[in-house]
Amino acid sequence: MKIGLFTEFSYVGKSERQAYAEILEQIALADRLGYDFFSTTESFGKDEFSCSPFPLGLYVAAAQHSQRIRFLTGIISVPIHHPAILASQIAAADLLTEGRIMVGLGRGHPWVLNRVGVDPAESPARFEEGIRMLVEIFGSTYIENSQGTFWRISDFKLSPSPLQEPHPALYVAAATTPDSAIFAGKIGQGLVQPGYLGIPLGLVRDLTSRYRQNLPRGRVSDVILGIHLHVARGREEAVQNGAFALATQAQVFLRSSANRQRLSGENQAYATKSESRRAFEKLSEPEKARRAVAEESPNIMAVWGTPDDCLERINFYIDSIQPEQLMLNIASGSLAQEKILKSMRLCAEEVMPALCA
Image (cartoon, rainbow, N blue to C red; front, side, top):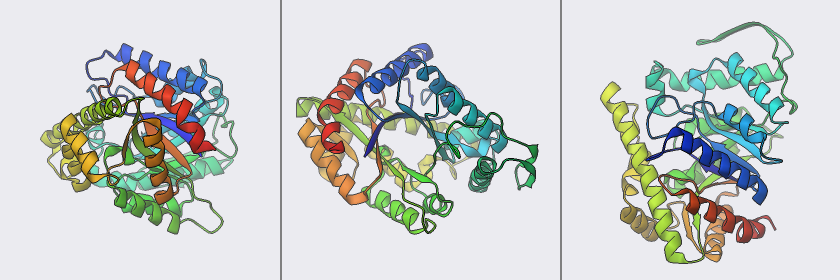
């Protein structure tokens, strides 16, 4: 079982400079503690949601201060990137990090698409075409001509080559959309399941099943399951910190998607994506989050408690979904850095050894 960490890179109440310093501190500590990978998202434009327009660049910097931890882009918004440019950036980052890049790919948050002028109606088709072209580039020594609906590649040879052969592992994100999970299976790549967003367990299980049912013969499953986590010596401390972290992250999502509605109407905003909307609204205040997790466990995939509490709950999700890797969302919302690092340490000392035994 590989175990990593994830953050949306939200920075409510912080400067961008402080946010970057804290993320780099988290990565360096995660490397020393034995976590297998670290993941953060990609976002463009100033808001409190994230200040991470270039996760590959962040990882190149982090690699200079770490020895072994790997780096997952969680996620790169495929519809806004030319596949040849994206493949080149991934390959260069893989070379500069000594082969430690993992590539998470998705459709991207609705407000990001709006900011760069991508028609939301084109997002699914751009997403699939972009990933297919990315796979083609990594699998080819030379492309004379490849013509898609949105992009064209001519006279192209990837340079530099990635250090990992044939290329860094690719993972497709599927939060609530069955089509994304099915597509990930059909193209034989990995799947990222962000259960830490409050998405119901039943839906996560269904999407994972659809992914595995569509894998080509001979291709093995590679599911990264995201869980919201806070572990502390005292149960009440863990619940208080966990509820605060999850609620303040839900608030950020709701505020960001509300802006998307004002600009382009409701059809593509999270406010009309029923599963996401219900999750964010249900968790949008600490007391609401605390109550929802207590009353609806294990349906809401938030794990808060003592090390023994967390082991019991995490093992339940492992038994239910059988992921190949876990991605723990500890650095969430407005939670203070000292509380994040404390939870990271305790998880590494008393939770991870039992999960990896």
